[in-house]
Image (tube, rainbow, N blue to C red):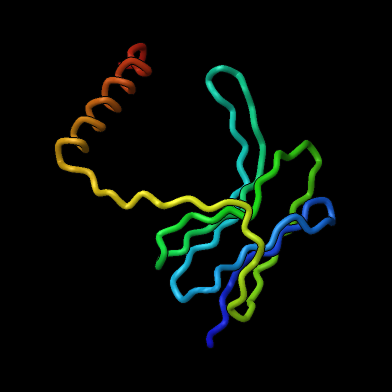
Length: 121
């Protein structure tokens, strides 16, 4: 059986997550985000998640708010196909959008950008 790849995440020297999917078709990602919203709220966090392509399931091994000065280390790991502890599972949306739905979404985005950029046009 082939090996699979994933990530081992440490936060401030402590192991906080390991994400591996024991399948042949998968996606594993570790995202570190800093968000600043228009309302002034902010958030800095990491998320370790993935997609079991065959079962069409989103998997999450964990996420955590980060603080100023936190140190994250990310190690790419290779492992025999054995599952790691999964915190949550949800079905992936695989619906396709009609041309009409796509056009509606583009028009909505157009008017939103037009309002946002009105002083620059």
